[in-house]
Image 1 (cartoon, one colour):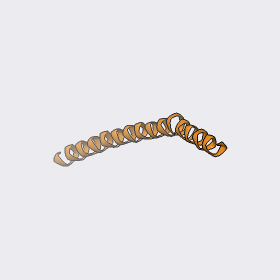
Image 2: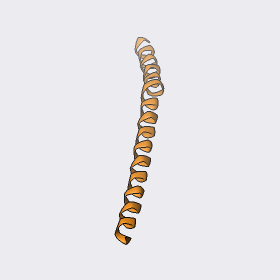
Image 3: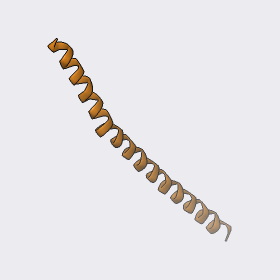
Length: 57
């Protein structure tokens, strides 16, 4: 009986850790990667436009 109780408590604690720590961490990492990617894209576009405009003159 105590083994079943410990399995249930372990499963509940595992779900608690997943939903309260890991999912927000992954969401935060995804947002950070998205922001860094957007900044890199903007820099790439700016450098490309500047190099094309300086080459034409």
